[in-house]
Image (cartoon, rainbow, N blue to C red):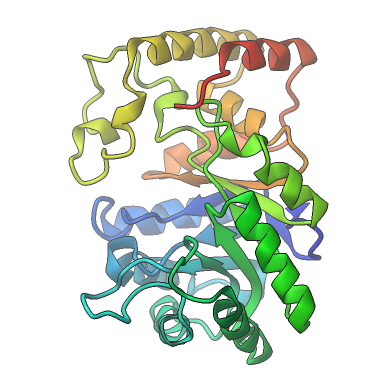
Length: 318
């Protein structure tokens, strides 16, 4: 496993990181989740990601239980706040009240004294940004979080946060978590440039596009048993990829991967990791076998002609 700095911050994270989405503890049974997390740790993954909203805290509980056996200093732990955790008016967003309460909840569920990274899961248009950033800074000063991150924020939102932090002498955002893959390259337009200017690392999610870029789907009509597209609880994001032209591109990707002697998933992961600004590719694995396959993408350098061919083949964001 190779490791990279989180932007300009001193902390180093594994090039491949493991997320729990909402599947650990529900879609993926607890014992399988434990085995998957253990395999990731064994293979050098030191970066684990969750969110309070993933199965309303269950994913955090499972992740915390799985990691309890390991030295806390040996891994980097991230979770998030923003989405509704109840039906009351203050059970959502980035108000000081919600941030503080949810930070305490996540700490308890993850069974830890501190979070390495605390993400604003989305931008809150209803709360003054100064209020959110001050609350996060206070959590840092209390030693409950080490670094502040954001997810799916626009370039303008990131810049505004940096200006406010500098004005009030608050700790800056150090990491952004955008969606990024061969099928979704929109952040290349401006988010990457803005982040690079301010030293903000990228931890990209869905780098294999919900498994579509793994090569398991070779038809829009015939799906492998047990795959995400067949699970109504988790297929809402993957359906948009099921167009014939997309599958045709994936079939070409499979040929390219075969020619390189690597798997299609490894090729897709190596492609996102070609960017130095990408600190880690966040994967969702439902079995130890998937972890074993995906971590092999770490350190893979793709030839220039392959990169050029991929740029020509995958130009459209879906």
